[in-house]
Length: 120
Image (cartoon, rainbow, N blue to C red; front, top):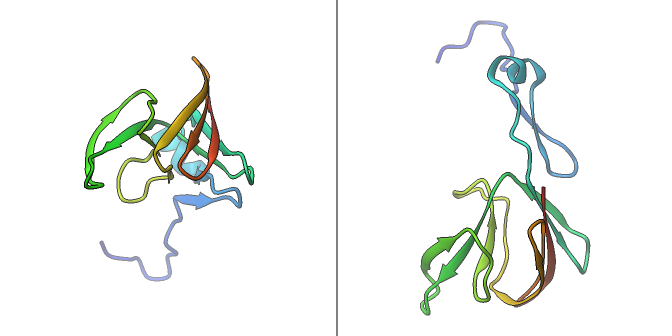
């Protein structure tokens, strides 16, 4: 792609201090709005908060390699927050206990943290 002399490259995406991504307003008007983040994860010990459009619960084999993914939580599965790929938002260690579970909320413990997952 050739650059036009004197033209500045357009930044289509910016990141706020809280880590959320925002589309440029003109780009958003032309191509549509950013997807709403449906999931909010909060780590108990420090209130670290992560949001994502979707989540998967990953299962690993005894060798530590990826085995399968599921739409629901279960002991032994790790939470992966979208986008799914090399630059995911967050991944937990495997779940050791499900403390509370409702349609819009899951409180769970992992090997090294306690979390609350809020679902819109």
